Length: 125
Image (cartoon, rainbow, N blue to C red; front, side):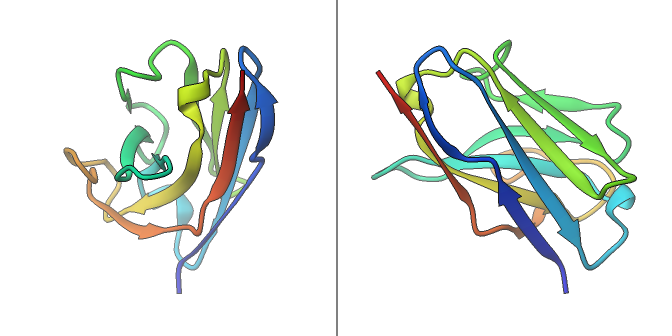
């Protein structure tokens, strides 16, 4: 079965950077779109970024555009989320997701099929 394991979360000061990683297993990684979503305390899960199977297409939430970068290494079955200029409001559990096909769909879930268990990112002021 599909497994998605996130890592890289932690505590960082506002203005700092973190890179999240997600290693996928269970099906051919390079055949599927991938995404990152987040859920802040007391809020619903929200979209962060998605990337197509080969990395040629990406999409970002307006709140992270210009600060976060999603990328993937198909040889390593890994998707990344580079987060720069972090803000207190970026504090959330970040979830990796794998799509139903090679490209992503439309919101709110962008056709994601499988979800990881999440990694906590805490940004302090």
